[in-house]
Image (cartoon, rainbow, N blue to C red; front, top):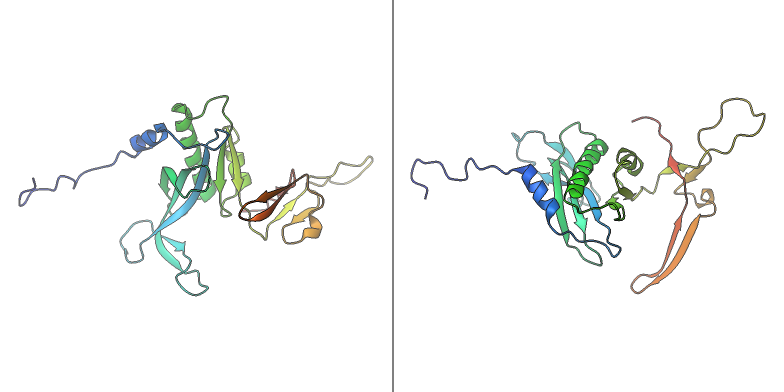
Length: 230
């Protein structure tokens, strides 16, 4: 009961975020057909254009608010990690959410968030030594190679979509005998928009699907991005 002049019972209520994270990591989680945990990570923005006194707002990119326009709107971007269910389903199991502050490096924050989550899952025996590696799926906004490097000591594989305008490098060719000068650090370019630079794929599969016709998948091994500066 709330009487006149008294404080509502939930006015000073708090959520124990760490305890909630541990509880979410302990519940039964959906797995893929081979028993693998598949995590998806993405940034979802909570738009707050009229909340001028809200702290740490960031300009968030939005879509569909105008014809062919991407209008930045002030809001709170949150990095959310979910477990994906197998099959054609839109249901997900949220495991963690972290609000990004102004000036945060998305890759570093994401790697720290995934590391803490994976350690909680291991502590709850959601992953054991004989289990397949946890698969992390990300969109093109993430640097997959950097995430994989920052999480290389954990049982995780990173799968991320890449932009169609990316350029990768092949491994450096073997150094020729009696060669002089500085050896090359990279090989030839692999330009996504130029099929003539692709060469022969290392793996190629063709599958007939029921709804989408013939699906062709090709892969090239040991391609790497050329790091310049950040």
